[in-house]
Amino acid sequence: MTARNRVVVLLSAVVVLAAVAVASVLHASARAERRDQARPGGPRVASGRVVLTAPGRLVFRNMAWGPHRDELTTVAASDPSGPRVASGVKCLRLHAAAGTGVCLQAVHGAVSDTYRALVLDARLRVRARYDVPGIPSRARVSPTGHLATWTAFVGGDSYAGTDFSTRAAIVDVRTGKLIPSLEGFRIVKDGHRYHSSDVNFWGVTFAADDRTFYATLATKGRTYLVRGDLRTRTVTTLRANVECPSLSPDGTRVAFKKRVPGLPKDAPWRLYVLDLRTMRETPLAEPRSVDDQALWHDTDTLVYALPGDYGADLYEVPADGTGKPRRISTAAVSPAYP
Image 1 (spheres, rainbow, N blue to C red):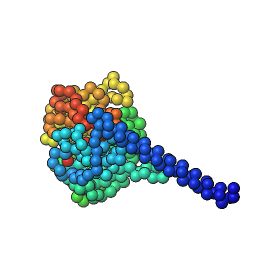
Image 2: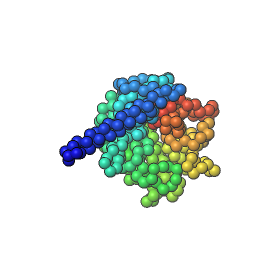
Image 3: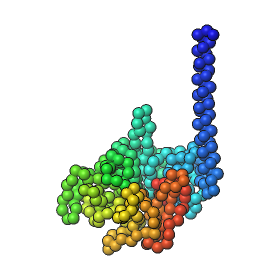
Image 4: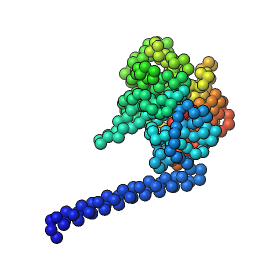
């Protein structure tokens, strides 16, 4: 065999092997999609037009395997386990309100991934892009749609332990003015000015006045609920042992996850609701550990994610401590009622 013939044979073999590899990947992807779609109660997902102003919709990150995995997806809020419409926009975390969306994405590089936040309009067109300094963990849009926030891990990748660092940013989507970190805000703790190099913030939630927000502050191994003021750039501690607050639509209560002594270190939380007027806590009827920033569906019901067969499922539970949790959708995380 001549040298030329050997090269031709080698190239032919490479082409055949590449074709086999591509076919195997496509076959595995198709098989996974058929498997997910065929499971009893499995999600049915199709491409379509998604807008953030359609009434009576629930949006979330679709977790089902297949061509629409990780896409911003919508479903009828009255039938959250029904057919889904996928937008083509991939998000690790997302939230939407009043025609504004925030989508936290991974940008895959040759050596490592980077992350960014996209501010979206009602038709999912990109209004602005911002670099995110680490792995995205939380996202929220204010009730007016004027403000957006996100939290990222800049050290570590879990809230369960103590060896992590976070960065919480807030942007005014009308002007593009970005507050890249809340760590520059003045902290008032127990009535006094507070300084510490170990301060972390995460889990911002907005009031309807485009000025007031609530968040988690962590320092010296403890967490606190803080109320923030965007005009004075001040945060004030309100209560200890509060994480990932979520302000109710009427602005009177905060849902949060609380570390409960005696639970496993990797699953230490229970869901509670705090009345901001009386500071009375109410434990909710969810017995499992919830590592999520719960979402208010309305003034009476909370929605949150728990691990499931597809990665995560959505559950709801009454906000007054009665009833019991109910799974409302599979293969979904990061919900919003825009």
